Image (tube, rainbow, N blue to C red; front, top):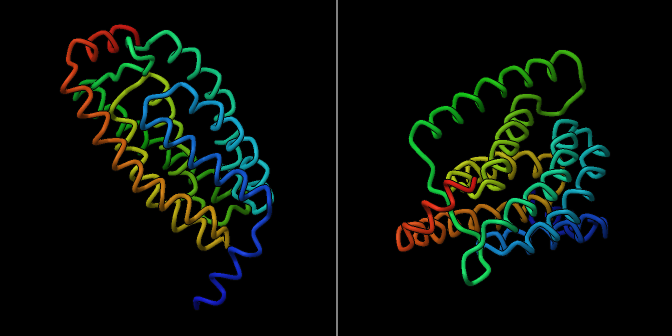
Length: 209
């Protein structure tokens, strides 16, 4: 693709996609800051994207964003009861055992969902699409429970998502996920610094998760 077509793709993006893109950016920024208001912008983003992904036949991504709608409410409730004295959420580092179990769960569920989508739907990229769905659900659950591991999962998801959305012509969304990738790396570092410098709070977060 040449640069002219690339720019035309941005110019031709729908207003809905732009609203979702901006909302998504603000959502991740507030997650990095450990602000509960991330879920308000997240609700707007995932609601719009559920329709966009249905329209371009990314069905597992559509289903994923329908689940995300519920996760925004769920995450708000959990974070509301797990804030430090400054009003920011307390980070939970998690354990090595948790890391291994989540990796196994993501790989297994991706293989199962990818096979189903490949055989029974006209999904554009069944296995990569299945991976972003399964890994994103895992990451969202980890995020809702304030787990540091959520950022590592998001980093991998963002790399795969950038390629998928670029191929489908969703250029603002692809650019958004490129920003998400950078922000996820920053988020990993910021949350890690917090958990190391506030070990007592991190232990409380683990008990409250």
